Image 1 (spheres, helix red, strand yellow):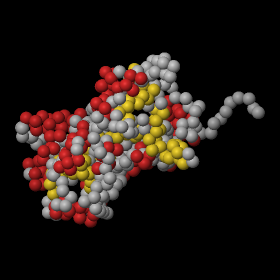
Image 2 (tube, rainbow, N blue to C red):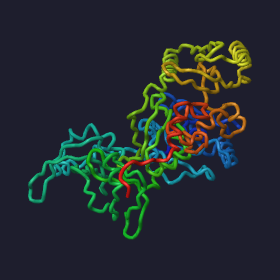
Image 3 (spheres, helix red, strand yellow):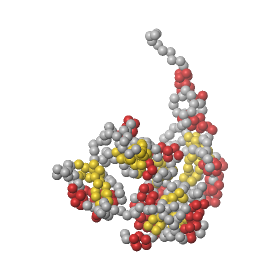
Length: 481
C-alpha cells in the first residue's frame, strides 16, 4: 500500500470497556463525550465513525476520559485503519497485534509509534532457498495465511534439508517466515525432535524436577522462570513445550498484557495471580467467538504466545439454557422477527419448597406490571430439592424477567449490590462453609472426617459415634518393649 493510499484510509476507533474488558467499536460521540458503540464485527464496519482526532466531539471524549482517571469507563483506546480492524476481527483481536494501535490519552493527536499491520507478501518467498531446504510449496500452502501474520505453521511439514556434502536428511518440523534485507521472505524451519533434553540448560538455566514434570505432563512450566536471554542479564519468562516439535519455547512476561477479564469472563484476584504466574485456572462463562457461553481451563502457552484452552472434565451442558436463548435470538435477528419477551410463571412452590406469601404477591404483580420490576427483591427459600438429588438446599431466589426464569444465589443479590461488598452466608450455613470450604475447626464437629451437610452445626448419629471413636486412646495389643 503506497503512502498516499494509507493516509487517505478511513480510520476507526476501538475502546476496551472497564466493566468487562470487552472491545467495542465506536459509531459516534455525543457533545458530552459519551460514546455510541457496537460489536466490532464485519457486519458493523460500515456504521463506524471515521476518526479525526481534531474533531471537537472526539476532543470532548478525551477530556472526559482524563477526568475519569480514578474511575474510568474505558481502559484502552485504539485507533487504526478500517483494513486493520478487518484483519484484527479475523484473528479475534490477538493482544500482541492490537497493542501497537493504542493511543496516548493525554495527547490524542499523537499516536504511539505503530508497527505496520500488513501481512507479509507470500509471493516474495525465496523459492530457491525453499528448494535447498527440501520444502515443497504445496505442503506449506495450507499454513501461509497464519505464517503471513508472523505465526508458525499449524502443524508439521515434511522437509529434507541439503547438507554441505550434498546429502539430504529427511525430517519434519514447523515453519515460519522471515523478511530479508532485500524484501524477500525466507521459510525458517523449526525442526521436530523426539523429546526434550532436560539435561542441557535452557538459556542458562537447568530446570528443576517440578518444572520438568509439569512440562512433560502439561507442556507448560507452570511458573515464571528467570532465563538468561542476554549474557549476565535474566528475564522473567513463561516456558512451554511446542506441541508439534517438542522443543522448549519462551515468552518474556512483559509481552503479555494483563487483563481482569478474558473473553467477557471476569477473573478473580486469586485467579489473576495464579494465571499470570503460569498456572492453569478455570475460566467460567466466557463468550465464544460465536457468542455462546462456555467454561474452559486456560493457561499461558509460551510456544504459541497465546492462551491454551482445555475442556477435559467440564460440564458442556452447564449453559445449555442460556445458549438456546442466544441461538433463538440470533435466528430471530437474522429473519427480522420480533424477539418475544419470555413470561415467567409464578407458583406457590419452587422445587418442592413453599414460596413466602410476600414473595408470591410481589413477583406476580411485577409479571403483569413491568414498572414494578425494579422493586422486586430476592427471598431466602429453604428446603428446595433438585431433580435426582436427595439433599435439600437453601438459596436466595429472584425472578429474571429478561431471561424468563427464576435465578438462584448463594448470597442476597440485593444486599451485595446495595452495599457494594461481599455478602455473608446465612447463619445456618456458616458452620458448613467454615469447615468444608475454609478449613476451620469448630469444636462441636472437630472430629468429623466427612463434609458437613447444608445447615449442619452438630454431628448426626453416625458422625457422633465416629467422633467418640476418634477421641478414644489407641490401646495397642502386642509385644511389650
